[in-house]
Image 1 (cartoon, one colour):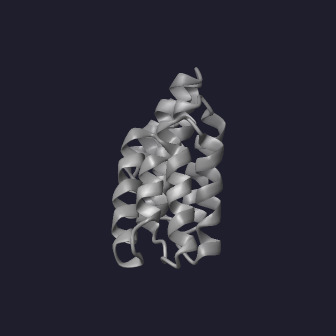
Image 2: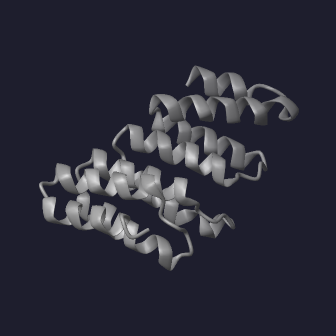
Length: 150
């Protein structure tokens, strides 16, 4: 929180790049609560958040096994006029994998084409891993077989 206080005390012209750098650091470390605070700070000061910013917060949540928060952020993106990309989905699926929630990972994989986002190799392998961790070997195998048809 000392970082947040330091950033908030700066002038608006230097605040945004510092917040974005701190947001990236939170993403790498899994400091999801601080990432949320930084996101709020950026929004309060009129910064237009982009997909990369949202993905950073989603990633921080995922690393901290906060899959509910990751999913909520992914769901909020369209309301913020942002289109989630495959990375957005993959990071949420990774949170599901970490949280041992194979059903939601599988559901998200099936949702991607419906919202015009193409699953990539990471999407499939993350879902396969989530299914394997949930002892759903038949589903993992089915996904792998489906990948060979890509």
